[in-house]
Image (cartoon, rainbow, N blue to C red):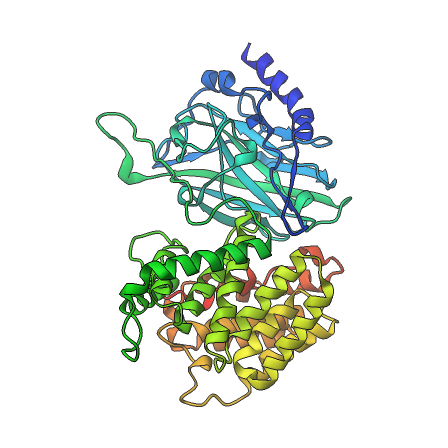
Length: 542
């Protein structure tokens, strides 16, 4: 009976996944992804809960549950999408398919309720034949679906990804009913891995994709083993910092200005008298921002929005403070740069970053650093708006800023060029900017070219970026010398990303070969451009 029900579910999945795909459109004319093919959560789809109740429990070994990757029933993986079937070489899960525009593809596995009770995080080790992104989701017995941040699949060696439950979010397009505000992990019964590239356009239609999962482990929280004699469920709070509905750039900016004006009036009585310096709230908010930004959190998990409330209160207390506006802009830029690129709130973050960075520039026109943050933000929005002329115009503005201060703006020029072909002008310009920066004497009073309390690993991150550039340019010997320079920096031993740098240094030939072949889709991302790390590589202290 169980086998028949499971076979029926497997036969239904491809057609249902295809039928329930949808697209949302942003208000300013950009088609963007959601929802994806986790169609078991859709109303009218097959209900996996009866099957899950009949499955045997999975063993727990030293606080970990190894989720099966083989093809033996009852824990087989089922296909999401048409034209693919998972297979299991050497006990690993392999999925192969051809990208078709607007069609979700992936694989899903059903398990018994209670399997992920007390879950702290998932560890997934995966490799692919080229770059793509997968969205892991969990569905519970009621049809509620929460998603983890997207996992970047890259060519070459397997890479291990750490997925904390604290970063899970409600997945509205795939859930039965509204968000209850939490997800009971003890009631989870379905794990899905869905390729999102058909929606983002990051991989062209017709591209052959293959990825293999070699490890999938549920790591349980050791401090929640028992509660009054019963296993305690970990409840994941829903994000509340930013509204989920995307708005047009003009509308959101207008609403933000109006809200700021109203709130500023509310706080007007609490402003410091003229000439007395910064408002105390501004000083407190700045301290809090850098505590979070530099990772000085003790045992607390990283929450990139943790300082936003205090920064907003400081802004409402004194909207004329340019530094508060700057830090608000940088916090929203950080959320967009290191957040989940498949989350539509990333667009909101970019719009808010532009708003506050522009305000900071108006309030402090002499701060020549701001273009390095503001212009890339504006370029990202221009690309969303499908405005190539504006992108080129902004490129000219960034180069003009670089001409005024090559040392500070070299990093942003290099970021703009790394994704271009290595034979391109943009790539050559980025490499030249980094080379020029390290061969220019650094004045003792110029903290931008040194490690500093608030950018404690500036040199390590900068030089690792140069090493990645040299590798892509076909200069492995220069990359090797640059990595040796990184190791000689006194603060290197305390750098949180030294393991990633060591992995690159140990596999120079492998990385160089990937850059040298004719397939740009398997090019490794530079460490400073890896999702979730782009700011922290230089700014995280511990």
